[in-house]
Image (cartoon, rainbow, N blue to C red; front, side, top):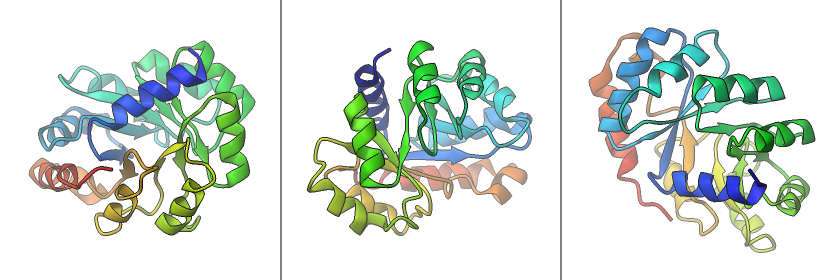
Length: 214
């Protein structure tokens, strides 16, 4: 898979909904009902972060849910990419990018949303062919005003900002021409997952899915 093909696929997936839920799952038993609640609320593209021992099992369970498009987040090493792919992940998200990781995802035909925070990082990824990137960490890196400014000299790059995105500031990002979607964890709060409050999560997802995209 070429970087251009990867970015085209990521962009296509991002256009399914304005929000990608960023999920940290401690108990794989929560995976299927969590996915059902988010999909019922209108958010089919889900990112499961590889931050817990349950993550890969959760990805396996979620991929069986009709309508689910499951990816792996916090993909940092080639080994992460390989295990995520084997678990059924359809895409990967990384906080940054290294040549080894980019090579691994391209060789595994795993579409990658690579992270970048500076103009130099963005230019390097664009030079390789990644026209779709993750702006991370979004709020600490200047937020929507910074991303708007970046869009002037680098209009060819589209972004999925994550990091500090909330229901309140998501519209600021979604209103930018260079933003395809945003990633956030507010649609699936840890306390709601622990309490198996799938109705609350579905309601949060429905509100997020109704946010206007760019």
